[in-house]
Image: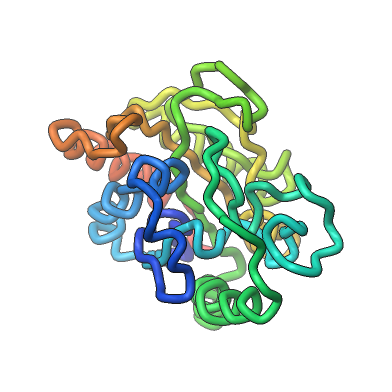
Length: 265
């Protein structure tokens, strides 16, 4: 097995008892900014290649695994030193990208710490375990795709309001989270699979790529966003089942090309 794996931090839909306010939201609001179905779309490729797959059961609005626990403000956690508006879509989402209210009131510090320990840390401990396992097996370099989805057009909350986006956006934290050749390989793999690809626009990469992407330590992490228009109705948030097999096939082609071209370090 080559030292390559995929994580999906935002596809979970389960809501735990600690966050009952989320259960009151209509589905179109609750699923507005979730990477719904991304785990299902990538799973056939993961199974075919037999590579590690780190996913979460939990909804993004419980805790955002692509943020830091410190990414909060007084509108989301009591006692925060960050003013209102610093992190409206941070570790806890106060509002969606469409401006719909999610969090009715700030969380207590006690609840904040409970959610960090119970829902944030296990995901990241698993990511760290995979990196560690590959290194224990002798891998000098590890390669990591952090898979997401995105609206097909930017909203007012984004860097590209009103713009129609590429089908795939590959982000490497402006060249910091992986070696350039790996970024180029990922871009080429998705293009060969038939996707239109952009690099570092409108996304530069998230906290996952920032945390784990250290090419100087042999850790190459890259973020891959996929347009939701490819596979879902963006209004109802329902899967377009008639196109799902084709998208899954394209993702298999993309990941297989990456896996094949990665040197056996």
